[in-house]
Image 1 (tube, one colour):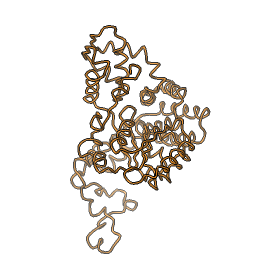
Image 2: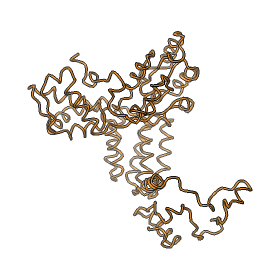
Image 3: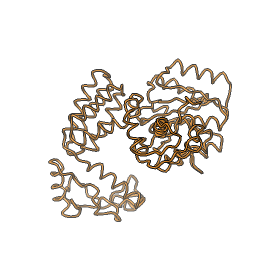
Image 4: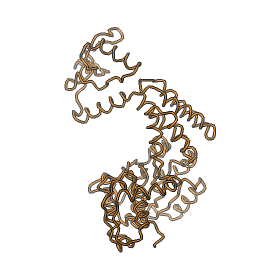
Length: 423
């Protein structure tokens, strides 16, 4: 028992003990209702490490009293999948007793491996629960995705992480024998990044380094211990998101040297090339945008290229792209514009579409005024007609960035709209 990690010793034994994810397993939440009805669909759990994907999958099987099979996509192939499906089929179980097959890191399964699951899912031989840290829209085949519900799990909040530490101190068989006081928790929370497993691993490491049974946890103590063991965390993939964050922030900060260094860290760690390329693609739009529209084209070509080339040659393409993005002028104007527009939609709701902008495919719609008074912009480019609902007209969602390309946008928009929008 003493050799079992704290995170494993504290693993919940029923759904009600899970900390966090209340939007899924709280009272009257979607997954809770499905469990109460004793009927769940195939599910893809999408979320960062250490938020409870594996735990919840196990507890679902336990609560429904179903056979539970588990595979890791890292070391399982089509043969392993077929063997599990054959076992499930031989049970002859249907309805409420359909076995659950849990596949961890399902995004690492190839198309053929995912294809091997389809028949069993369609026929109800198994209920699939997949866990992934990657966007399933990119990593899970559409046929499997259409037969599953995607549930997003979130980083744990500060209060939830503190609740987990409190539970560890009070309930763990070893820790409750000590007198532990949490004088400071900022370092623990910051290093964990919302990852419960990482939080408990570091906490156990800090407590285990103290010789006395009376322990006062401070930020200094935590930082000293985590720095000594930083290499071990890297090796185990604990800094996966920290490193990609460092790469993107180096690009955003116009530092190609930082970008290439963090890129090299990911390459040497065996990171999936498509994962890196996807983040570069996002950065090209979020951080560079219309300051240099070509950046998005290059990042997209990078993604397409590494998808068919792979290591080791793809490292050169990734390096070229990261350097280009880092050296490009920066603008987050498009990112800010959609944020502002979405916030407006949330606040104002479904405002009516102005009649002149509506589609009028039928005679009745035309008689009701749909599309009337619309001015065809190609024939009348300076018409200044209204394109927003009455309640939000005149709102500037897009504020061009201060760079050569978007400065030209700003001047054109000023001339076109003559003070209607603030640029």
